Image (cartoon, rainbow, N blue to C red; front, side, top):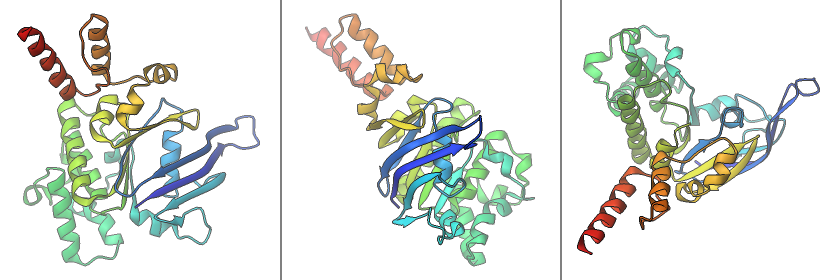
Length: 287
């Protein structure tokens, strides 16, 4: 499902001494099935933007088209939009409330009016996607699980809705590195399986560089940069000037270049760096 944002502006506390322009004439198009990374420092407008996409916040002005439907139109039922646009907040495990894992994950599909058989199929599939064994855990309380497992339950509840658009706001916040990598891999698996449109908000340049098709950089309520990871992360000075950076491996590559090592400069993943460094070592060994 595609997303088209036209001149989106949002002002907090308008007409008061605390008036703040959180979004300032944002224009953005996201194609059906794209995996988009959204980055920006605190206060850049990232979360405000994502909350507009399923109607949690109404814009001060501008349009938001989801699958060709203008969700800012008063006649549009936001409940129908929210069935198609899933939003995972930071620390979604804080929103768990049912007595069993099955009931918590089934809550969304039940609200879609599905049959009990289809609900069970969706719960099972969602649990398998996030690596939670269905038969072993479905009747347990989510509050008996570890923090990482509770996060998986909460995200599985959104997966089970099979949204056409999935928005993930810092889904790995507070997780240990191993659990974070596993969860991101599961999100990637879901994207490949369903071909849905994903918008991932993250402070990790490494995660963004490995996962997404395009990167949107927000600054002071505007889109500051937009492009592929390779296009965006080569703008080191621009990113640093707005309080961001590039993946750590990119700094290593720049340091090697400064030492006179002939290596490609547009590298932003560990895998690419490994290939290029080994290539350089072999060429110098042969020489």
